[in-house]
Length: 121
Image (tube, rainbow, N blue to C red; front, top):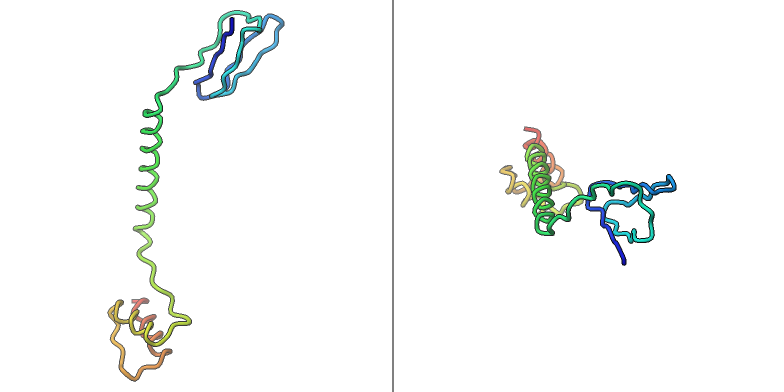
C-alpha cells in the first residue's frame, strides 16, 4: 500500500526514522513514505490552501505594492520632456504646454533658456 504525504506547511518538515535519521520534506513536496520505518508520529504538514484563497492573497499583496509605488511616484511629480536635440517646432510645443510665452523670433537657445527658467520656478 502506498502512503504519500504532501507538505503544505511554509517550511520543510522532518520525519524521524527508527534508525535515528530524518527525512526532510520541503514545502510543497509530495513524497511516498510507505517504505520508511517511521519512529513516532508524523509532523504537521498543514492543510492544502484553496487556489482561489492563494490567488486572493497574492492579489491583495500586489494591490498593496501598487499603492506604495503610486504614493512614491506622486511625491516626485511628473517628468518633463527633455529639451536637447529638439526642433524649434518641438520646443515651441513644449513651451506652450508648460505655459511659457515665447517671442516669434526666438532662437532654439532662447526657447530652451525660457523653458528652463520657468521650470526652475
